[in-house]
Length: 311
Image (cartoon, rainbow, N blue to C red; front, side, top):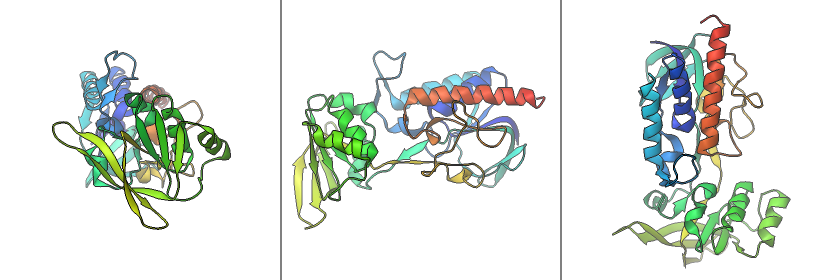
């Protein structure tokens, strides 16, 4: 099947690209991917997206984005792209065994938070367990929280959370951080932050009925193996993100962490006609509003590219 614009991935970036491409009469197809709607599907309340003064549930917001894209003719398919060939236009895209071609491709596959791998992360995700302090810190005003991690992300999250939480514990499995010196110092100098060294969260406890609520975690000493339960209101997992770029790394340039590289201030990749937007290109902000902005950029650039090649 041939498409003028193929958008790989959904979320705020992909759906915004689809809205703009749809309004430009480019009949975009959206391959929504394994997590249609992206990370917002595991975010309960979104209170920092303009236009929703009362806040909005992440999944509901993504439904609204999808509806708006479909209103302008986007064909949203809940399918996963397994392989691409970006060697020449028209570009080839495979969904399982079905081959599609496209004049231009917009990549918006996002990034996935890395998790510890505990069952409780799924059970209490959005109910005390989070991977985004700037998204959810506000809900922990005056409460005690744990941040797991030892890199710059963990330091940033811990510092940010002191604006809201009464106490922030940083749990790290070693006896030193790998974060940059300045970020470490900010954490170590902050009176609201306490570091628990040589420790790992190995279990998560809470109520399931009548409402889900995180209550405590089990910490294990990574040196002695001793375990103890610690009451806590919030758990922030800050052990990094992994960009969902594996399908494209044979064709496109990435940075050292696998984020797709685009020309500064644009959504343009190293291949003319292929654009990238949202969290798959963003290791800094990772917000719905910034992702949507780059989705708009990608669609406008795709439209201009198509005009330049005489479409």
